Structures are given as C-alpha cells and as structure tokens.
Length: 465
Image (cartoon, rainbow, N blue to C red; front, side, top):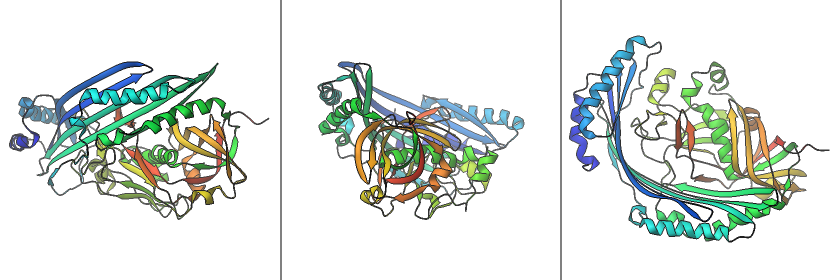
C-alpha cells in the first residue's frame, strides 16, 4: 500500500464524484504487537498489520455506510454508501444533519522518545517475561497475567466540505496482575498503564511488578470491610474512574437527547456540587492515551467544562448531536476502528485540582475509609456500584489497617453534592483497558482526579453486628 499521504488525489477524486449531500472517507493503516504471559507460560506473541477504510454518505437525512479493505474499491464503495443512504432516506422517522464546521487541512506526526516499532519483538517478550517472573517469585503468588500491547496507526480523514487530515496515532499498554492464595482465601492485585508514548513507558518497572505481587499477598490478611455509611476519601485512580463511568457517560449527548428524564436532569445551569467542583473533558493532552488532535469526524478537539464552579455547563457532542440540540461540536465523535461509525465518546475526563492536602482530608475523620483504585463496577443511569481494589481504615485522622471487599454504591448526583474536599494533587492517566459503548470496545481514554473526600457514602460489606 502506498504511503497514506500519497493517497490524497485518489481520495479527493472519489469524494468529488459522490452524488450524496455529504460524503466522508476515513482510512487507517495499523501496526500492532502483543505479548501475553499467564502464570509461567507464554500464551501469545504476535505482530500484525491491518489496512481498511469506511465511507459515510448522507442523503436526505439518511446515512449510508460502506467498509472496505482494498483501496482499489474506494470509488465503488463511495457509490455503494450513496445508494444505501438514498434507499434508507425515505424510510427514516428522524432525519440526520450536521452542525456547520469550517474545513481543516492538517498533518500531525507522532514524536516518540523510543519508537516501539524499532524494538525487536523478542526484546518485548523478554521484558514481559522478566516482570512476570518477578511477580511469580513472591511467596503465595499462584498465578499471574502480564500483557504488553503496542499499536501505531496512520489515520486519514477527508470529506466533501474540503477537510483533509493525516494523523499518526501511537498507543502502548502494560498490565501486571497477580493472584495470591492461602487455603480457600484468594486475592488479586493489578496495575495497568497505557499512554500515547514510546517504549520508555514500560521500562524500569521492576519495583511496580513486585509491589503488585506484594499487594495481592497483603490482601490475604486484610480484613473485610463492615457495611455502613462512611466518610470516604477516594484516591486519584478511583475518583477518575468514578467521574468517567458514573457522570461522564450521562453527559454524552447521543445518550442524553434520547432520554427525556436525563434531558431534564442535565440542564445547563443546574447546580451539581460545591463551588470548588470542576469537571473537565479535555480534547488534547499530548502523550496521553487516546489523545489525538482531531476526532473521527475531523473536528478539532477542544477543552470543555462539564461542570464549572459546581454548575453544569453542557454536554459532549458529535456534529450530529450538536445539530439536534442546537449546540457546537466538541470533538467527541470517536470510533475504535475503521469498521465502525463514530459515536459520542469521552477523551480525557477529570476532576480539576482543588486546594486541600491529603493530610487536611484525613483530619476530622474519626472513622472512615480510604479507597484506592478501581477493581470493577457498573452504572445504570444515575445509580452506580464500584469495587475498590483495596482500601485502608481511617481512625481519628490516621490511616489504619488494610481493608478488602469495599463496594461503593449510590446516586451520582447526590454523591457529587456530598463532595466536601478536593485535593491539590491532580493525576491524569490512562490504563491498559478502555471504554466500552455501543458495541465498540476497548476505546483508549484517560481519566483522573485529585484525592476527593465524600460524606455519607454507602459501603457494602459484612453487616455490622
């Protein structure tokens, strides 16, 4: 396949021949490697390359889509997407349109300190095996999972409005997970990292691997939490996952405009927390996972406030939802690959820093919980349930014993109002997994927060006697 930028004349010519009201072409070429160890076995090692594209045509308010893997089919696929859109248009009840956008022409190239494409696959395998062996060497650790992935994508977008963008999109991840066992007691610990950086991100993590294994062993002797209501401090990781899952998804406009109750709840100008609470959806943070200059509709990404000074400001939009709700596109239309059409998705969602130190948060808590990292959870509209990976008691303003089985539940709107302190130690990071929505998973995202303190949090666990 020729270099992506060399395809510009061919792509522009195919779009120019389209009979649709609007036409866009998205092309991708991706190089990937993957190494997976489970316990003491190498389960998977691979390198692959994939090329493909998607055409979308809009005719009379109806969409037509065609996916392909050969550029020789580009002209034919433009016509195919047009014919589908034309056939669909008379049958749809809700017609689509796009918010206006100035055309963009740009090239964005990645700069990596250590380009992972230049690292031999055998060297990647040796590093992953090294971390895996460190975890396995810890007594009582009976199983491990160590997984490395990298991806380098060339992305090209063009539309009939004159936009033509080329962008390079790197991605690298590492998962370290350990399972410890003592009799029937089985506990797990993990760490995952992911960013749009080079191979340097995953080097020198021997101490991190040992820490994961030691934590799994420590959880064997941690005591289960007693259920009840507590003042809770969330660490940056858990607070970031909370704000992404419990609040961020509610602010994706393709969900909100279909749900009358959510539209009523999420009216701009409504108060949702203390004046110090600021929740930001940032369009582009260099080096962070899933961070690109443009979304998958060619919209420049920009920084928006979901909540500013405790007041709801607005929602995340694609061009289509912006047109439906009379808003401006925010650069939140994303797809996990060329096989999918873009939908409204998050990018970098975080609670902005406050002014409190961690020590100030601890003071005044006679009996509380310090919950760290997210082990899993679920949300249903404004109700949420999250499991902390581990936690510590807070007794008379001091950290105490390690706790396990800490499950936080509640209503996101009430919980936001119960935040009474926001830390000055903001951290934003990507994990090795990703966000799932509409059958598209995993989508690289980042989230973050400073430490936050919340009053009256319901914690599930063993009932008090």
